[in-house]
Image 1 (cartoon, helix red, strand yellow):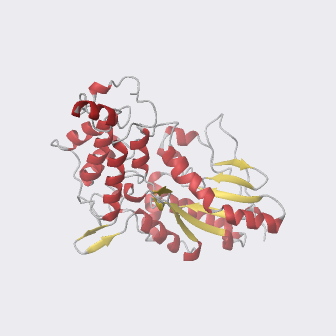
Image 2 (spheres, one colour):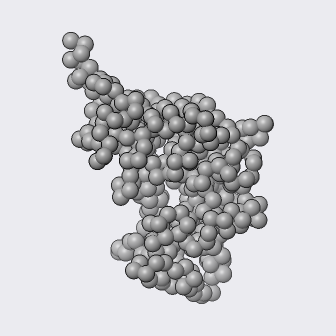
Length: 364
């Protein structure tokens, strides 16, 4: 069955790439990205509708690129357990009707003393000595996109051999115009890879769906949403965080950051340690030390729940970050324009933490 889905409905601002037609039965692999947030399921449902109408639902896979302990974790309140982002992504996949064997979870690994272990983004930041920011977002490229493409490499090789041509993939994202001016300008459909092995079309079918429409659709479908969106777990009021990505995202709004700092104080303190040792603010607009101080003032948002962040996974993160900070940063230390290092609240003056040479001199 052949069916052409025209994307003329999803317009973008003048000057951006024009919309293109996608022919669903000409797509060999559908990759539906699920972060555990609210937007992925809406986009995935629209893409699934197209694949089902074309009779190619068996080509659909869902995938979650896990950020480990930096994601919103599961919490238990009043005897009720509310799932974390990774678990919720799998629940969303099943609720959409994708078989469990076609849901994939990936997490970036590294070799440490001959053992393959998870490589967490905050450890990388501590090693590098700088934070992600606009235009330089390894949290999206190396911890998400690259892993997702890699997860399908063996499948692509097998399909190419079978088909005798490049494999056509639709990389379905939950990006919406409502999220930011940059995303409003971003095309809802574009080709990001065109090689002898694969052709990848990036498709954001919910690009013009509003935030309120996403929330209404989620509630109407009876789909569980991430507890961080609510004022407290189980409230169902959408009065918590406005976005669901890293718990402490450098691109998050001030309110979201203050809420996250109060909900995950131990994680916030770990971020502040990285900031203090490396002498680089969390983002150009504010430091983590300042956010922690502001979160303690009257009038700061009520967290609704406070996470203890205990357990082996968080302890492994803490140990890895602290070990990284005992070594010099892998890139030259610098501070973004307009934020001198000595202006960082809580920054150390002559601090020897993370500087083995200075520490040795002091001990001598």
